[in-house]
Length: 302
Ligand SMILES: C[S@@+](CC[C@H](N)C(=O)[O-])C[C@H]1O[C@@H](n2cnc3c(N)ncnc32)[C@H](O)[C@@H]1O
Image (cartoon, rainbow, N blue to C red; front, side, top):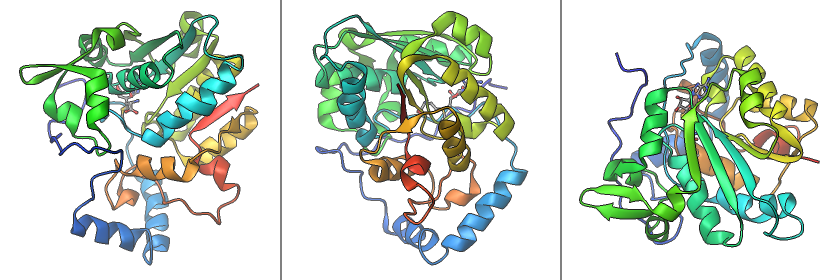
């Protein structure tokens, strides 16, 4: 048995010029409208019940390039401005990125910062629990389906990030050079902190929703333990109530820019019947208590 659940069913989509998601087909749109509209109380109830019963696994490796353009704009704008208040110069910005899967997220961030913060010196230390995933990230070589299955991939991003070699997409050397890859377990807080901390930017996305709540809480403590006194944590993809509670307890403040849009982009990667899977999330509900904290994915300390 393979150590991970790989997604052999990735299929390449047509590439967009702008970053708007390719329209979902009519059946999918109708289902989304139903579950996010009149059937929302039913979906919320089923989601709660599912979470109580589901079996979590650390073997899900679904990932995609350019998973959330809104979050990347937030990163290249307010986040970097916060971390580098005097401008892009100064010492190298160290970024620790956990649970990197095949590397799509790390190379996306590297490409985006390279393009949108050209004066910024940065390095991404990426890692994954599974050595096979770390090896694939290190290889930085992808099939068309791996690169093109995400709904937000644009021509400009492809040009900035890859060289095409036959049927393969190879990460450009200047982007590849920004990323180092190793194996690491985000539940091993002592080891993480000895190897990586403290750092100004920690990224651990779409992984905590794969852990049972007590393990997610432990992992979250390990992540905050990595943060420098002035630092940012990017943590899309975890239980919304748990994240709101833990970020507040840790004294982390949400970045408010585009919260609603980023939440919507995150949901583009889950099926319309989001309540059936632990990585599903309710739609943005403005009547929730403190919606900015509830739906934000990026938080600052200091
Ligand atoms: C769904 S993928 C998310 C990948 C990427 N962060 C993204 O947002 O697209 C989750 C990844 O978390 C990794 N993972 C699961 N448990 C982990 C752990 N305890 N420590 C580090 N990585 C873990 C899995 O191997 C998988 O590659």
